[in-house]
Each structure stands twice: as C-alpha cells, then as structure tokens.
Image (tube, rainbow, N blue to C red):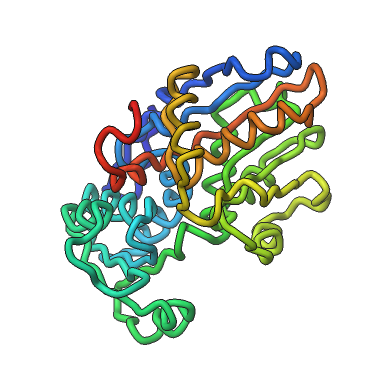
Length: 305
C-alpha cells in the first residue's frame, strides 16, 4: 500500500495488487514475458491513470486549488479517473468533452457525472485549440490537467511505475501508446540495456514520436521503437478479429483487455513473437495499463470476462 498525503488529503493506492503475471506466450521461442497488472491497483483510477494523475493532483492540492478541469472524449478513461479522484478528495471537477452532447450519455460520461463532474461539450473543430478553451474558461482556483495527463508531471508519474518491478531483469519494456505520456515516463525510467517499444492505438499519428521525446530527457532515443501497424483501423476501432482475440487471450491467459489499448498491445506481442522479432533469452515486461471500463459500451456478452 502506498499512501500519498497532500496537506490534509490522503490518497491510498494498493500497488501491492499490481502483480507480475507470466504469460504462456513466448515459451516456444525461449522468450520470457511478464505482465505488470496495473489494472488491479484500483477499480476506477486504475492502471496508468493514477500514475499520470498523481503529481498533478499533488500540485493542485498543495497549491490550494479547489477545482480541477481536464479534457477528453466520450469514452475517455482519463475523464472517469479524474472525476473519481476529485470526488474522493472533495474537489470539484469539470470535463471539457470533445463533440456535441448526445443522449443518452455514454456509460463513461454517466459514470463521470455520478462522481460529480460537470460536463462542457466542445465542437470537434473548436476542441483542437485547447489553449483557446483554457483561456476562455479561466476562473480563479481552477487547475487544468492536460488531456490524458500529457505533460512533464504525467511522465514523471508514469516513470514511477517502474519502481514496482525488478527492472534490471528485463531486456524490453512494451506498452500501448495513446498520448505518449506513459511511454515517455517508461523511457525516462528505463535502464541503458533496455529497449522500450510502444504500440500505437491511433492511425497515422505522425507526430507521436516527437510528442513522446518532448517529455523525455533520455539522450539515446534509439532505445525507443514505435510500431504503428496494430491500430485495427484507428483509435477505438474493434473489428470482429480483435474481439475474437480478446476472448481467446482471456481463455488462455486469464487477463482481461480493453478494446482501445491493451487488446492491441497483446495482439502485437503475439504477432511479434510469431515473426521472431525477439531473440532467445530475451525477457520482456508488458505494462497492462488498465482502461477496462472502455469495454462498457459493447453489447452484453460480447466478451467472456
């Protein structure tokens, strides 16, 4: 159990629940694969979301802000995690949501509202200019967290993920990539002998590498490899092939995945193994970044977990 105390506010996250689980994958190639199950540390503020939020929350609370605003889409894990964290610490939260307001609200937004988050809907064209949104909605005592926790503080929090594992044992660290914040932190916290591999969940995000490296202080950027061919058609796209894989992976490994990030991550790991991308003796750490609530808008019984 890790307890963070910000003035009079205490945050408890049970990182002891973040087990390291071996995979059956890789045995034929004599490659060892372990999964860091960050999805287990908290039912709502799960996975990498807590790590990316923790230093923003600390700064906001210690500076005396009483309201937190952030950005996200209708199915954003970050929106729910922020709403829940603010609710637990009696801080008002506001979510600026990409797109027009539709009824019924997505299950994600319904959950955010249940934690007291006020929603403000922004057209997709206006949403692209978050600097203008921030300026037009500036009020006293409102603290802004970037979308997805992107920023130096978010990367600092993500870097601390690696404090929970015997890091020196691994040759590779692999994670899904959205905004790039988590993998920037993993890159910062990695060791000289390790390669960091990111599986992008977005289609044709050509600026992703520069966005990651802008948060990294690692001089040798050759340690970072981004793979862009596992998006399954684009962000949050989930064709039958991917849903079938999610079911098969659960039946074999007993690890639940989400349709936006981790399903594509583990599909990529399997595919890379089949292509003999790794060498015998390699030891790989896969980061399960949580986000399982993203499956909530699938029809019931779409998945076996």
